[in-house]
Amino acid sequence: MKNLSIISLFFIGLLFASCDKETPLPDPQPQPSNTGSIVFKFAHNVNGLALVKDSMMYTNTAGNKYEINEIKYFISDVILHNANGTYYSISNTDKHYVDNDIASTLTWNVGDNIPEGSYDSITFTFGITMAKNISNMFVNAPEIYMAWPEPLGGGYHYLMMNGKWEKAVDTINNFNFHIGIGQTYDGLGNIIGFVDNAFKVKLPASAFSISTSQTRVIQIVMNIESWFNSPIVWDFNIQGENIMQSQSAMSDACKNGADAFSIGYIN
Amino acid sequence: MKLFKYSFLSLVLCLAIVSCKKDEPIPTTTVTNDGPTPYVIQIPKFFPTILNIPADNPMTVEGIELGRYLFYDGRLTGKVDTLMSCATCHHIDKSFENGIGYGYGVTGIQTPHVMLPMINLVFNSSGYFWNGKISASNPNEHNRTLEDVVYLGLTAPHELHSDSVSCKNAIQNIPMYPPMFKKAFGSDVVTFKNIAKAIAQFVRTLISADSKFDRYLRGEAQLNASELKGYMIFNTEKGDCFHCHGTVLFTTNQFYNNATDSVFNDPRDRFAITGDPKDHGAYKATTLRNIELTGPYMRDGRFATLDQVINHYSEGLVWSPYVHPLMKKINDGGIQLTPTEKADLKAFLHTLMDSTFITNPAFKNPF
Image (tube, rainbow over all chains, first blue to last red; front, side, top):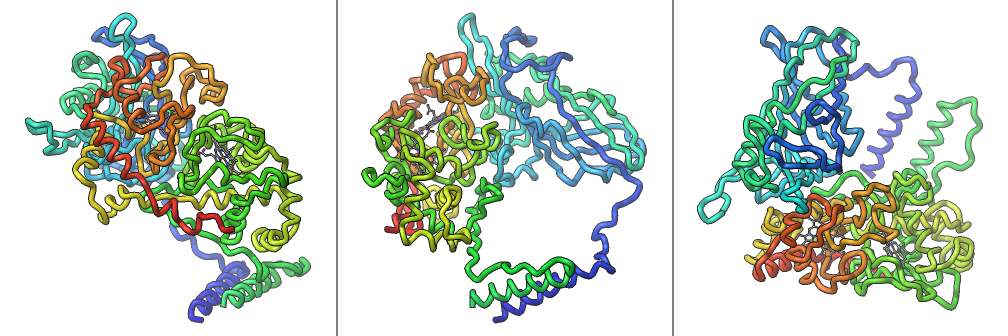
């Protein structure tokens, strides 16, 4: 009976709300007026040319011939820095998943509350910092497929770059260039600690300005070859093909990845 | 009390309509006392919250109940001599598979692939069948949903080999059904569309989340040493099963070539759907929940036992240009497990057995 009266109240309330057109409900969140919006676009290339997947057409600095089949990663904590030292951090979604095979992930509309002004540079975290990289925070596809096993530190892969490489003439091997939380091992191979491998990326030449009501479209480009060339010359024979349990390889990969991103255009 | 609530609801709705749309005539039917009761799927912890339920077939208690009867009813085909139902092939005690591999249709024709279980399908938005043919992205609008699967199952020569008219007429003429259709869909005229909707609703309730491993995750059960080692093998580079059979569903519902062959001529592989050369010989990495019940394994049932499956991944991989990159150590033949490691991995797979699911009274034959 008590339920019923609550329901009645609700419906009676609805009745009035829906019919009383004279007094509209106040807008719950008045929009700040001096803001613009940003749309990020993601693209993948190899030394300046658009990535061609599934074709053994690339050779890295170490001389390994390779092809790329899949690229999936997270970026998080995007920050727009002002010349005067202040910054604006994009917080409506603090993590974004990019999957080269899913067109919708290649556009990230971060919303329309970017304060107008001139910004010096854009930085972001590649991957997700450990404090925020929480297992099971994603339950739906496609992000859920990035889950990083609990015993290896949990959370999500920062990067899954899957492909093949020519180990020798007539020998094609698979590689899984995967980065996430690293592990430290004792002499017996037991895991005794975890390492946060997420790293900061400062996009070169990323100054821009935005005025009220303006939408800026900013393309972020990942150069695949950058993961393999410097400062560490990546050789699949040395660093390995499957690296999610090799902290030294993941650490090399992260050093290389720091300059893998650049601005394609700012429109 | 419930009746009262509904009449009250109707009253409020009428009032709302009366007071807001004064220039339109008052409708004679609004929500009736017989309106179906909405059914809300209880999503187990960490399971996907995106459910594959078409907007035009909301789940209702009455729809599900009707679907359960139809699923088990041998009279569904309208052919008195056959008495075959969905449950002839999809057995509850085998996780809604048949546990013997291929299915055989009404006329004895073998199904092109071995059976798939019906388990946690409401969480699969990437495609039903081994090759994912039935998905929202299929250009053929009759090949998109579980409702469409019901139609295909009913009509395929290798399955029930009937037609929608015989089916609809048969059900219309069984006295118990028209009132059930009335309750579920508001009319006692049986339509094939509503038959498909009801069965699909039932199928969507078949959720498994109570295996020993689930209970372990909830802190209600303990894994033994061997199971724990198997869990580690599954979830580390050692075995590396998780990349394809990971997450709480124990499947990504994605499609991979897992290195079973070097020649590819199956007209029903993933390539047949996408036309992408990489998808030659690719199939869905099926769920490993209740896997001990659903042998023989792989789309052609080539492995009779889980030991054979584990041997495949350990040393039996076959190289081809189409092998998915997530298949490790392809040129060494596989992940190279020792006999103890194989036993541990198998022990872990057994913890995915959910006996609550296969004995759930709500899923059983209602007749």
